[in-house]
Image (cartoon, rainbow, N blue to C red):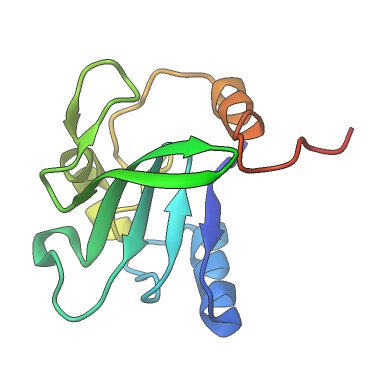
Length: 136
């Protein structure tokens, strides 16, 4: 099951990002402006202009979400900390294992498994207070 959400404000770049995600082939780079999110309280955004060269231009975000919107708690490169697993660590540090997949983790990209079943991610996404409930 693929629970990843992807967005880009430019339709052509969004189509390219979707193709890269769907085909899951190494050595493909996501276009600038691509936002990738697995859970509502974390995201990564592809930046340009030499931002975070060690992280291939990705900026990592830790977020607070409410029905009113989103608040950025932490943003940046290797200093942004993942809190999902209960064992805080650098988002970029974990994503670095997927370097040949442009730092986008998937089950077969070399990243350390989070140890959570797919239903947990689906439940977290469906509980996102910014979104209407999914149609049944």
